[in-house]
Image 1 (cartoon, rainbow, N blue to C red):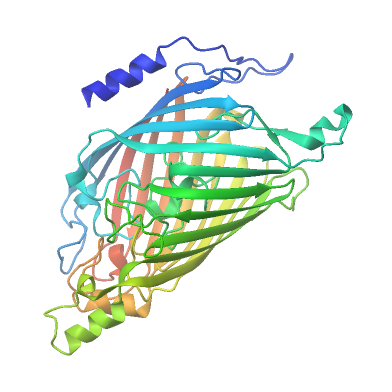
Image 2 (image 1 turned 180 degrees about the horizontal axis):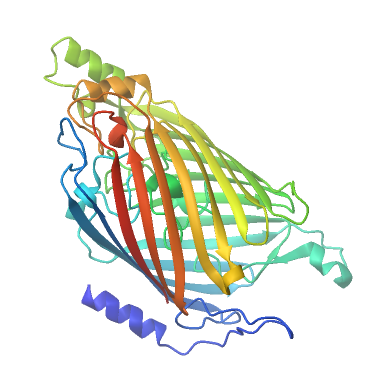
Length: 465
């Protein structure tokens, strides 16, 4: 841990190119949002981030608890994630990215007991430890498909500005283009993304607020996979497709490299119709198909009811080649210069076990954020989101009969939808230093009417280096 921290600090103290913070004449200068300036012209990139989250909850009502329950007694926990981002532009349209990460601390009840768990930074397998690991390692190639015969006066038609970030170093991109990525990555960086509700560093923290819980996206325990991805972008629409590796077991740390045996297909269409004048509108439709060694809820239930198994055991009824598929809808809409709304809806088939992300078979989410320009706080934001999660009838019965998933298992179940309200205020203190008090309120944690409600206050410190 110490060596990793020293490496981050050393890399960030390297000389960097200047980045103008002043706007055009007569405009307010833009506040610096990183501790260190980052060049818009250098071919290389080095930056980092630190995300520390403290959460707690008081005692709450629970008629009973099981092996995978959220503890009904008061508890608190602190998690931390450190990331070192590096990249290099090999050419105008080719770049390589390599990120190191360390995840430490823990979550409430070791991240058990809620499908919409309260902290997306938490590693669900504490045995993995906090040793640094490779988070992303990929090559990114862009092919210009814009019309070659356009003159200089039409240059704006051929390319668009692109904000430089750790996941994309290019400052200009062709308006019509094909992008290819290959390597280790997170599917959530590219699929089901939402500018209002996907950034756990500065926005929401709940698993089912930052991602569609019904999207069981391919990932190891830490949230990463190896994939090949192709993306076509045009002025008002785009489409992306990825073939990714699945974990060998549900929520497992090892990926299955045999594509004939296990894999995931992901496809998403994105439309930018401009429903309101001069206001950004984005609508995304998602579909995924996972092939893996999955257990069947129906078979696990039948084996218990016939006396074959002492309780429903999903792990005992896995079969290679089973399929979990689902769909998602994701939208965001600017209403004013400072107010945006967003929403998600997701569904998966719910017959085979939740495998890679969380135990959600249906989700609906609505939320908004508000930037506090009026109070001369142009980086500060207030956000609120409401999420309602559900599971299939077979999934309900499996848990009611005493079965355990990789997150849930109260021993019994009186089913009710898991409803969650989350709100935060992110305050920009200085350059890349942010602090966010936040609050979550969950009814029927783990879909159980016999437990809860529970209130979870939290505090996040984020450093954007």
